[in-house]
Length: 456
Image (cartoon, rainbow, N blue to C red; front, top):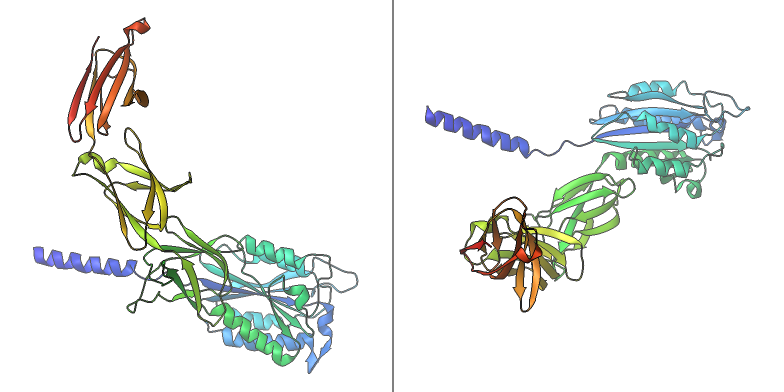
């Protein structure tokens, strides 16, 4: 029976570990088509009017997307409800909201769109912010299809930047029909020129390919010899525009000693932070869709080991503040008995013992271990004759260095102190003259307990 329970427990543990090691599910891709329905879309262009061509090409695209998994589509149109003149700069509507398997619904709705009004591009983009329901694991993409420029005084560039900064949508795609609008729309999003029907169709296919497919990349953590040997450290990928965290990876090397391949969203510009001590950062990394991108960061590391001579239970709680030499910023608070990796260079320590120990110019070298060792402390048991006021000082030549203020009420306190010479200055609480102050010098020996009796 015991053997059966052990086997069952082992199987359950393996299954649990397997579940924990499953990759995070891919994000849901949500694509919002923002279509120009203004009066100019009635214009003749190549084989037909622009609206008919746009409807046909979008319909073909929707046919190819209807069975794609992990995708939702929506359609917003502007300039299609009110005739021009007069100009209605609020003329935009979400025709088909996001839903699963709704490509055919969008295709059917396209047939009823008739160009009528003006071109409020900025307002349509601004309204699209409300088209994306809240979602914790979604990629929100806008594809703007237009044959003209903003006509209502809005600023599509500013609206696009705001959408990206707030993390509502990634950098939009813009397809300009009929003539080149690149100069006006480069600041809005990634621009594709559709000066012909063939280019329009190609642009749609290219946009969808980039929207749906991840791109490979690798992060090379370079040592002091510019070889990618550093590993086993977390890397955070931030959206450069919104500042939101996109990925976290613990960097690893594969069986050939090469940095592992990552799948990244090519639509995002990244800031990458490698959480070494101190961290290393590189900003504005762009991923080229369909190409393997190598991201190099110089992160040469060595190790710092903090230890105490011999063994002592007191070392379990002893810590040291680690700083870069000449700087006050705390890099780490390291526990004694542990070894940590640091970027190579010179560091200083403030060891949080009584009294404090300060050590400067500790050099961390590539792939080497630097050991800092301090003596085992001793224990001083301070026994007071009564409640009162007093302090502990370290004796250094002819100077007293303050170490500790005694608590007023306890008549006995135990202090862990570094080996050395000390002096207590104390006055009982109810002694009404300064002349009743007591001085007591003593020595603390490594690993030993010293009883200090402070009596009048």
